[in-house]
Image 1 (cartoon, helix red, strand yellow):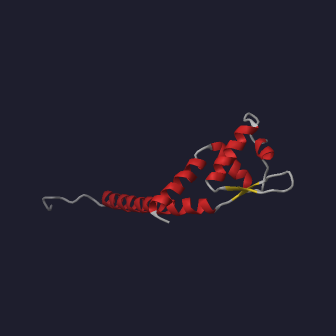
Image 2: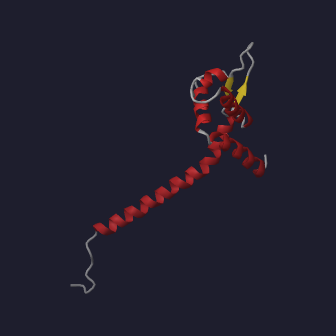
Length: 124
C-alpha cells in the first residue's frame, strides 16, 4: 500500500473515531456483537436512524462488519484498522518518550550543578 493510500485509510479511521458516540459503540462491541437496537439502547437521546448512520460510518472505516442471523444483523468489531492506527502512533510515542528522556537528563544536570558549591573566581 502506498503512503497516500495509507494516509487516506488512516483519515477514514480517525474520522470514524473522532465521534464519542462511535467510540462508545466500539467499546460496547468489545463485549460482543450487538444489533442496531441494542446499540441504540446506549443512547436514549439519539434516534435509531442516527445510530444506524453512526454504524455505517464505522462500517465504511472497516471497524465494524455486519452479519446475518435470521432477521438480526448483528454488528461485529473488526480491530484490524486499530492496529494500523496504533502502528502510526508508535512513531510519535517513541518521539514523545525520547523527548521526556532528554528533558529528564537535562533536569538532572541542572540539579547536579545547583547542588555543587559555587567556585571562588579569585581562588581564595
